[in-house]
Length: 255
Image (cartoon, rainbow, N blue to C red):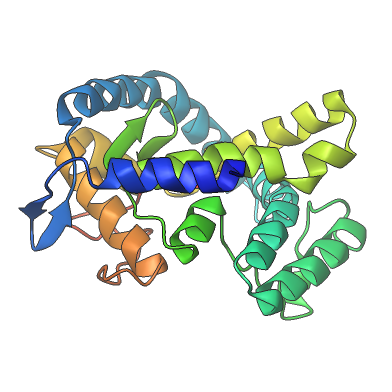
């Protein structure tokens, strides 16, 4: 049996291991809530003490200029480096069209965009990024989402998406083509890109994580609703970057 088949079987069995409950009209399968809440408390402290202050510092420096700041360049470069993995996932899902568009986007931004620091593919050629990951690939293959998980630093996820994050690292063509040091540098840039996104939506993230009466339950609901909508699994359409205030808030850790 192949690795992918064994992974799918394990996730399928895990997805049937507990009975979901209802939260605000959606099913929530969270048998590990006690452990998840401990991880969530850790993530909040990391964000409050480390990620948030750094993100605000970078954002304040960039706001002083009307030119694209360091934060924007890092976000662009990190996004560009993620495209080969997204191309691979689109092909695994049997969706050649987004794979072809992401391929040309990667080529244009890597060359004309100075290694992805700029985004001429989107601004000049009408080639927006088509986002996907191996968690979506598993969903296309019929693997259930499994139990809800909150991962250290990475934040909200499910068993299916957590497994997908691991496989995304293994199947990313860049990590097989680049020298080890270059591959680690690319990975670091992608991590920095996510920190840049945290800075871009800092006020909203702060409202969800630090000001909510129960930030764990709110973040769980937002993540599941948004992710299920992305995968056409019955979730309600919400804007994850909407202004904070109720349920329309950001998932600060989404890949």
